[in-house]
Length: 218
Image 1 (cartoon, helix red, strand yellow):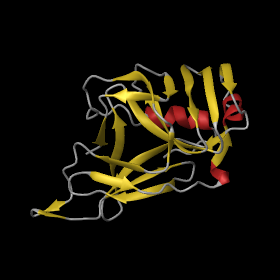
Image 2 (tube, rainbow, N blue to C red; image 1 turned 90 degrees about the horizontal axis):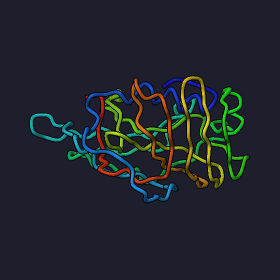
Image 3 (cartoon, helix red, strand yellow; image 1 turned 45 degrees about the vertical axis):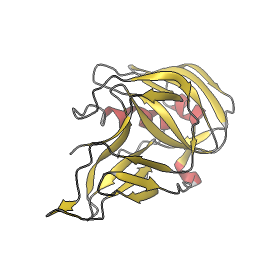
Image 4 (cartoon, rainbow, N blue to C red; image 1 turned 120 degrees about the horizontal axis):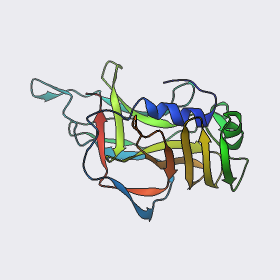
């Protein structure tokens, strides 16, 4: 995972490397007008295309899923993945303050221009987004795990306070929008899925329609 010291830069480039996989769900995808609560204290789901961990017809335990990110690859939570793809990260741990960065300052330092409205400008978020990754029993990386559709997916960040974000800025050749709220603690946000023809970034609290948990890379 690339180490960028500004959250706006990491939000842009981390996505550019992980969303062009041909195995991403291709069904109808959109977001509804419904808003979901951003605050989370745990993560659970069932990976729809999970078919791994069997050896001669017997399930071999040890496949894990981890929520990790930040400039140092901080692991916020871990769970085993069972034979049918179920996982449950019961507790998400708080990152250190050294892995948080002030969002407004980060946007300014990145040279982005446009409108920035943050209800509490002291808001600090993790220095990069957090994503879910699957690992083999021997600890080797196995693939990305996403919750999403053909057009949107979920990402995670930690906030040190409640805030509402209305941001529309241009950063180089990309347009970046935040139309969402965050709560103190861990948050889930909906992200517009990127492609080589779509360099724009949008983060909301909208519910993703037709979403599923999916393993990428295998």
